[in-house]
Structure formats: C-alpha cells, structure tokens
Amino acid sequence: MSRLVVISNRVSAPTGEGGAGAQGGLAVALGAALREYRGLWFGWSGHRTDEFTGHIELQRAHGVTTATIDLEDQDVDEYYNGYANRTLWPLFHYRIDLAEYDRSFDSGYQRVNERFAETVTPLIDQDDLVWVHDYHLIPLGAELRARGLKNRIGFFLHIPWPPGRLLVSLPDHQKLVRSLLAYDLIGFQTREWLEAFRDYVVRELGGNLDADGTLHVGDRTVHVAAYPIGIDYDDFMEASRSPLAHQACNRLRESAADRKVIIGVDRLDYSKGLQERFTGYQRFLENNPDRHGELFMLQIAPPTREEVSTYEEIRDNLDGLSGRINGAFAEIDWVPVRYVNQGYDRASLAGFYRAAQIALITPLRDGMNLVAKEYVAAQDPDDPGVLILSRFAGAALQLKDALLVNPYSADEVSDAIKTALEMPREERIRRWRSMMESVRDEDVVKWRHDFVAALEGARIREPEPPPE
Ligand code: ADQ
Picture 1 (cartoon, rainbow, N blue to C red):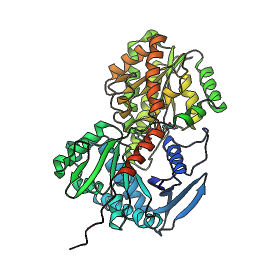
Picture 2: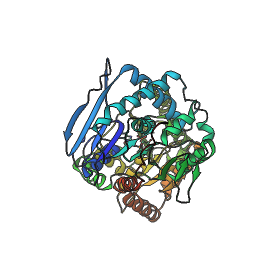
Picture 3: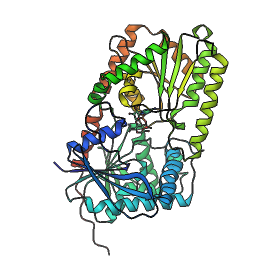
Picture 4: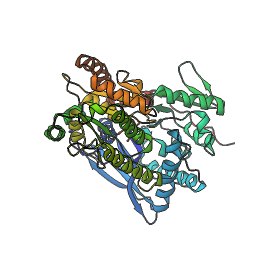
C-alpha cells in the first residue's frame, strides 16, 4: 500500500481516537485516513512570521506525522484572506456580488502555492499518493509537476463548483481551471458540481468527455467524479453516547422546560443562510401566534474569518435580527431566539442535536453540509426529530427524506416548521430511517476509500517529453 500525503491549507494535530475532542469532522476524518495509510499531513500552521523561511515543523502524534510551515503577513492577507476567502469562496458559492477581484490577491495566491510546492516536494517519496484539498490549493498540482513530481496526485473540492456563466466573471478563470488539469483525479461533492466543471472544460477549454467520465484536454487525461463526503459515523456515534453528550442533552432539555427546540449549527458565514433562516422563523412566529411559547430556536454560530469585512457585517446583521425578533415576540417567561456565538466540541453538539425536535439547516449554497448528517446520526431511533434542509446543500441529494426547502423563501421555511411540528411519530421514524441508512452507509470511511482507490487506479503518468 502506498503512503498517503495529504496537503490542505491548515493542519490540525490529531488528538487520538475517541469522540470528545474539539476537532472538526474533517480533521478527524483526515487524521484517521493518515493513520490507515501511514501518512504525512502538510499545510500552514496558522501562525504568521515576519519573513518566510520555509522552515518545516515536523510532529508525530497518534500515528500521524504533520509538517507545517508559517506564512508571512502579506501571504495571509493576499492568499488566505484575499484570493481564497474574498475571491473564490464567494464566487464558488454563487455570490459574485461579494467576490473581490484584486491582482495582489492573485499573485499572493500563486506565491503561496509555489511556497507550498517548494517546501513539500522534498518530503514526497516516489511511490506516495498525494491528495490535495480544497480551493486554497487549486494550482498546487501544477506547481508540484513543475518541480518534477510524477506521483499520482488527486484533488478534492469541498465547496461547490460554480456554473460556467458565473465562473467567467473571474479574471484569468481559464488559467485557474487549466492548472487543475495537472491532477490525475479531481473529486467533487455531488454530480451537480461535477457536471458544472465538465461543462466548463468542454465549452471553455475544448475538452472531450469519455463515456466513463474521463476528461481529455490537449495531451492531458483527468479522471473526474463525485465523492460525497460523509461523517465519521462510528466516531460520531461514540461521541454521542459519551457522558459529555448526555450532560449536554440534559442541560438543553432542562432549560427548554417542555418547549420544543429548533436547532441550527453553522459557522457564521453568509453561505449558510442565517439571515434568511431567522427571517423564515420570524415569518412562522407572525403566521402562528398560537404556537408562541411552545418552542424556541437555538442557533449556534461561532464567528469565522473575522479579518474579512463581509463576515463582520453578517455578524452585525444577525445581532440586530435576533434582537428584533426577541424584542417583537418575547414574553417575560419566553424568549423565541437563543443565539450563541461560541463553538462546542462534537460530543456536546451531539447532545444538543438529540435534544432538538427540529434541525433547521438552510444554507443558500453548500458543498455538502455535515451538520445535517450529524443531526440525523444523533437522533433517538424511537422518537427522532425532523430535519428541514435547504435544497441547495449538497447533502440534499442524499437526504431526500428531509423536508427540503428553498432557503430564500421565508414562507417555505415557515411552512416546513409547521409541518415538522405536526408530523406524526410514524412518519418521523420512516423518514429518519431512510436518512440514517444513507448517513451510515455513505460515511467518511467510504468517501476516503473510494477516493484513494480511484487515485491508486488513476493512470500512472507518462514522463513529460523533453523540452524542444
Ligand atoms: P463547513 O462550511 O465548515 O465545511 P459543515 O460541513 O457544515 O461546513 O461543517 C463541518 C464541521 O464543522 C462539522 O463537523 C460541524 O459539526 C462543525 N461545526 C459547524 N458549525 C459548528 C459550530 N457552531 N460549533 C462546533 N462545530 C461546528 C466545508 C464545506 C461543507 C462540507 C465540508 C466537508 O463548506 O459543504 O460539508 O467542508 O467537506
């Protein structure tokens, strides 16, 4: 079995097996993959330095070696806060109104990808499989090839791929997409994003598509496929049975005092549709005065990317909106919105999910959305809650038995809350069972096995012809 080298923007030091750690689902999933394949995980430490030195900090913990580098202030501003999070993130989430195009971002993005390639190349052995993650590192494969790497290199995009009509608004869009052709395998979360990518390559780059889905562009052959990411089912179930999860569940139930709980859990990001969700809930309260006092909404949303101004704005907007809803509807013994700006470990989240009769997960656009899957996994099989899910989340293609809504429509969201509150137990159980099977069977272990197997099977690269 080949060794696996995972490269992502950030590296989270693995904390070992078991459910109670404070890591995100992806960090746990990649940590497990690396243990299985005796791997190396390379990326940015998250720290800034005055001057880039290329010094690699190597650490070994719980069977995984991590290798991290520090970046300069200018790198962080132009690459991470700039091109990745001000240009690509909004554009790939269909928000060209928020996308900022600035040449200094392009050059910073390119420079950091070159720095990643320069530093990681000596750590890669001839037989290693290399797996690059996400929109921060699109040109990395081409930079690794430019340094002579012949290994099989795969890329997985965690976020949506935008329709060609939006993507062409990006200056130098062809250059960015062409750099992806250096990979042997490109994975997307869903068929929808995969098809948008293929359409672009066929129309804009003159590519051809084989019957088996392989793309040919000039002399390049690239395998492209959808690999929907899942949760670490076993690990999450273990977390949800832990004392911490029970404590969290009881704490929320006791404080709810027989009221039903509608839960939302998201990073504070405009793609997650939080303002639209609050507005949908407000519409429900306006339309159903008889239900006031019977339920409340708990929104957990820790701030992220605070150095990007649009994220400050959304925080201000939500503070205002939650305050206005509470001001308009609260009674002395009932507050309709509990809005919490802190993150929780996975075990506590599992407990909160279990205590909530409804999950309201309404991103305007989301590559997958693992919170929806975690909510399903955490439910009591005899009395499961109802998942209300945006039809624009990648997860909606698998969780077809959720109540699927258009997150832009406050009326649809309001109606779905009413339907969820009134849904008979038998229907809740039937819908939950079918969703649970998909969450269990299409988990993160399957995701990484499918991707790595496809990468192992991807054609070994022919040596490049010598320059003329
Ligand atoms: P994210 O946009 O971060 O990820 P999501 O998949 O919902 O979105 O969450 C990832 C993890 O973060 C989950 O395990 C969740 O429990 C945790 N998390 C989210 N909000 C939290 C909170 N308030 N407190 C504590 N933990 C929280 C990106 C893409 C997604 C894709 C993932 C994985 O945007 O579409 O599903 O990568 O590929």
